[in-house]
Length: 265
Image (tube, rainbow, N blue to C red; front, side, top):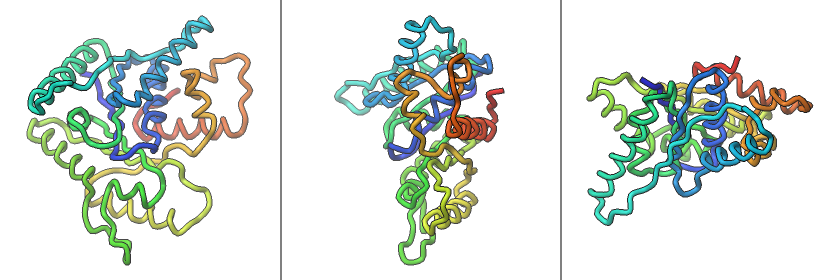
C-alpha cells in the first residue's frame, strides 16, 4: 500500500506546488517509485513542472529521476450527483493504478473546496498545509476575534479536514498526520510574526496538527521551475556553482523532508 501525501489548503499562493514538487523528487532520489496526481486541473502547476522536466531530460539527454504522472480531469456531467459519481470513479481508478507500482503518492490540490479535494484529504496519510506567515493566511485555519486576537472558531477548511478525519475513523483507517507548513517566515521580529506563532501553537492543540518550517521566499525556486528542476537536481550538475542562498535553500529542503519523515540523503 502506497503512502499518500496530500498538499492542500483553502487558498492559493502559499507554495503548495513548489513544496509538493521538492518532496516528490526527493523521494525519487531515495529510489522510491512515486506517483503524482495534479488535482489543480485549471492551473496545473505540478503538471507543467513535469512537462518542463521531461523537455529538459530530452534536450540534455539526462537521466534525472522523475515520478509517474496520472492525469485526472473534472467531470462535465450536468447533474451534480452524476458528476460526483464520475469523479469518484476517476479518482479511485487513479489511486488503484498508481498504487500497483508506487511506494508514494503525492497529490497536489487547488485552493478552495471541490469533490476531488475532499476525496484527496480523506485518503491522505499525511496532509501538508503550507501557509504564508501572516494573519491573512491564518484565517484559512481559524477565525480570530479582532480586538483580542483570540481564536473563536475553526475555519471552513479546518471543518472540512475534521469531516475527512471522521470519515477515515469510520472506515477504521489510521488518523491523518496534519502538518502546517510556515512558509516565507521573516527573519526580522514583528508583532504579526509573534502573533501568528502563538496563535498557531494554541490552535494546534485544539484542532490537532503539528508545525513545521517551510521555504523562504527565494528566486531560485521560481527559476528552477522553468527547467523542471529542483535544488536536489543541481547537485548532480557538473557546472553548478552554489551560492550562499542556494546552500540555505538546500538546508530548508532537508529540514522539511526530515519533518515529514523523508530524507534526501
